[in-house]
Image (tube, rainbow, N blue to C red; front, top):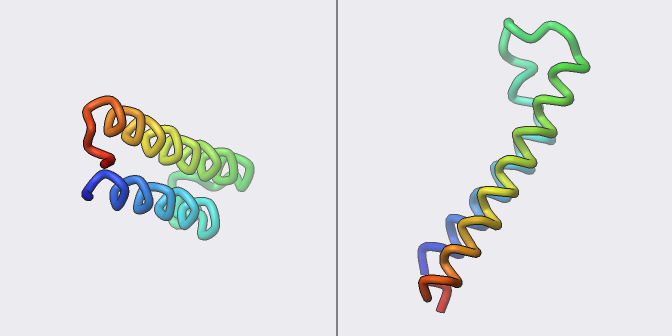
Length: 64
């Protein structure tokens, strides 16, 4: 039961990071292009981790 919740949570975190642009709050990143690319990368990483978690859960029987 935990694996689907973690997968859904990771997808939401990726979407929130993309929509709000967490990196834009950091003073290190002043270039808007870097912030945009960073947000897309963070959202993609969350999605990949989410799908990887689901793959492992299916292999080990956690998703049933």
